[in-house]
Image (tube, rainbow, N blue to C red; front, side):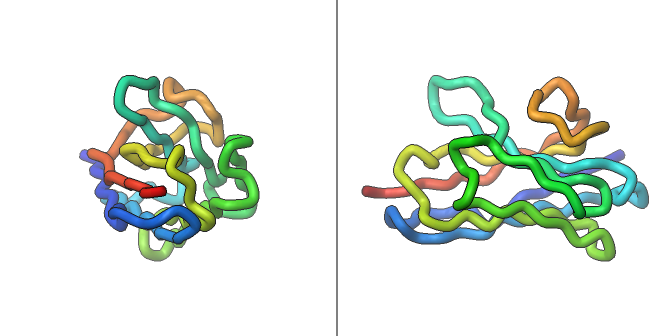
Length: 122
């Protein structure tokens, strides 16, 4: 059974930074792309960023491009999301997910974590 566990969320002022971490169980971590999504109350789950199996390619939503950086460490079965210049509109529950491809659609991801809350105050 594959398990994904996120951490690193919290309360931060606008303009601040957070780094989210997602640890994935199992031996096949490097065989899959990984992604981050977020969901604000009353809204749909939105794509944030994705990284290829090797970590050499990344893909971002326009809303976070230039502020967020996704990366992975295959030796540690871990994917990261560095979030800088945070804005109140970044407030959401952030999920990591395992994907067959580096896609922006939630349907392309088969395993999900439980989420970590990020709250950005103005």
